[in-house]
Figure (cartoon, rainbow, N blue to C red):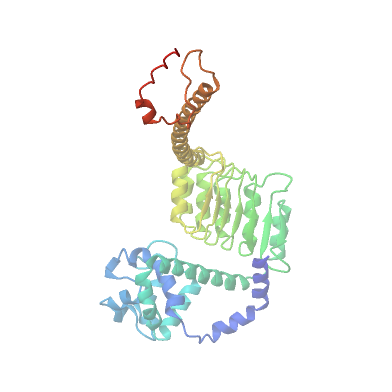
Length: 416
């Protein structure tokens, strides 16, 4: 919904963008607008880790340190600046930059040109250099985000200028069995679907898309039965962002045509015959965010390698893919091991507590038996003739020592 609203606003304000382009006098901020482009598009060969031709473009200091900076950037003269000249060389020129990968979008090249025309000022970036040195990871993430945002804005501006497709072209697509609808409202951008066609889309049906190649943004070819050559017309759909090919007949050779779709963000290849070889042409799709490979012959490691090499990409192999299952079970195994260790420690502690409790119980029982024995002895009467036992706490009566030593008196004499 938000995306559609953006397109509506851009469609209404297209004249504003034209005016802005004609009278663009805004001061270009190197750190916010130019540096992210240089890092994301040139950093692979001219970055912090690699310096082809001894040139690094990842920071202000690196650019200033370049011995041939005077030729690299000629303030106010982009046509004499080596940086700009290399960006606009013919595609087949060996000096064209970036050396590997697609050329920069026209919007980014125009921005660099305008920056050089304004003097190629690096001061703003210089102020941010200490933060870059202190937090390289955060700076790189910020630069990548800024570059993505700049690309998105450039896309929106370009799409806002797209005009409607010829009526006869749309009629041909509909006659081939497709449903054709505006992406939103009265937008000239189109979403085309063959998913509900009476029969699967074939080579002839796909060929009709060329008539509206600029306008098609979403395309659903679910179940299509096309040859590798029959899918070639898709390479003309430069604005295509979303493509459904699930349960179709496409294979590795057919997928190669998709490498020419710079704005493709969603690709569904579920239930197709693609293998690891199909991933190679997809490496150039830097805006790809969702790739579905359920029930295909793609292996786990190559799929994850593609995901790691493409910022923001999520490759979905399905919950039952052997590689996914192995990773999931490995994680569960680690969790189970940890749980078992914790349970073992708890059991050992409980055993110690049990042994201590048993010892305490045994001591208490022994004490109890001793007390009961003493009580039983007190309750039994003494045997006849046996000296009476002194009651506990009762002392014998005292004996007078004088009485013990007094001799016995003689018996009285009888009276005569």
